Image 1 (cartoon, rainbow, N blue to C red):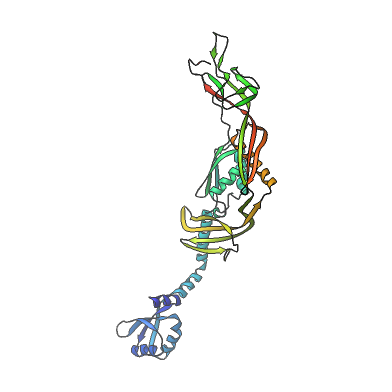
Image 2 (image 1 turned 45 degrees about the vertical axis):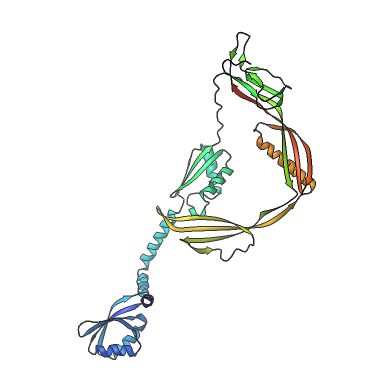
Length: 397
C-alpha cells in the first residue's frame, strides 16, 4: 500500500512489450535494477507491466539493445495529472474563480431589513449600523456578531427600548421596540388618593376630588390626601380623584468603602490572531506565535462560512487578546469619605422615581475601622406620595 502511494505521487507508466526474447528483456531489466511490477503475459509474444516514471529512460536504453518493441498504454500519477491540469488551466482557473465568487457572495450582506421603527428612528439605526461597519456588500465574517450589534445599537440609539438582530442567509433582520410613553389608562369608577409614605406636604396639584390635607401637614402611610367624595352633605357624589401631592420624605443610606483595593484594568495594548477552523483543527492565517502579554483577557469571535444556502464545516475565528494589569488604589480618609458620599447619592437615586428631587443631605456619622470607611447619610427628598385606591361601596371616610 505504501509503495502504491509512492508510485502515485512520483507517477508510473503501463508498458506493453512485444517481440522475440521477452524473457531475456525482462531479465535484463532486473539485472539493471529497474523495478517493474504487475507483470502479465499476453500470449507468447507480448507482456505488460508497470514501471515508475523515473525509470523510463533506462527502459528505452534496454529496449534498443533487444529485438522487442515497447508501447506505452497508460500514464498514471500526480505528474501526469498536473500536466493535464496545466493543459486545461483555463477551465481550472475559470472554475476556481467561479467558486470563489459564489463563496464570497454567499458570505456578503445583501439586505438589511428594519421592522417596528418609524422613519426617524430607522434613519438613526442605519446611521449607527454604518458606523459599526454593518452595510451592504460587507463580508459577514468581518462584522460583529448579532449580540454585539444589538448591544451597540441599543447604546447608540436612545429612542429604542430593545432591538433584536437575526441573520437569515445574506440578510440582517432587525426588530425594534421604541420608547413610546404609554398612555395612562383612563380610570373608571370612584377613587381616593392616599399617602404611600410618611412625609410633610410641600406642594399640591389636585385635578379632581376634594383635598383633605394642606401644605406643611404631616401625613402617614395610608392617610387620605384627596377624597373622591365631593358635593354638599346629602348631595355627595363619587368621582375619580386625580392629582399630585408632593411631600418631603426621608431616606438613609449606608456605605462601606475599603481604603485600599486591588483590581484589574486594561492598559490599551492588544493583539489579534486570525484562524481558519476546520473541524477541530485551527489553521493560523494572521498573528503567529504566543501572546506576548503575561496577563490578558481573551475575546473570541467565530463565524461560520456558507456556500449558497449551505453552512460549511469551516469557521473564521478572530481572537483578541487585551493586556490587563493589577492596580492598587489607595484612598486618603478625605478622599474615601467623598467617594462614599457619591456612592450613597447613586444608591438613593436608583430608588427614586424620575420626577423626584433631592432637597438636602447630611452625613449622620462616619468612622474608619479595619481599613474601611463606614458612612451613613440622611437625604431629604421631594416626591409625589399620592397613589389612587378605589372607593368601596359603603366605605365611609
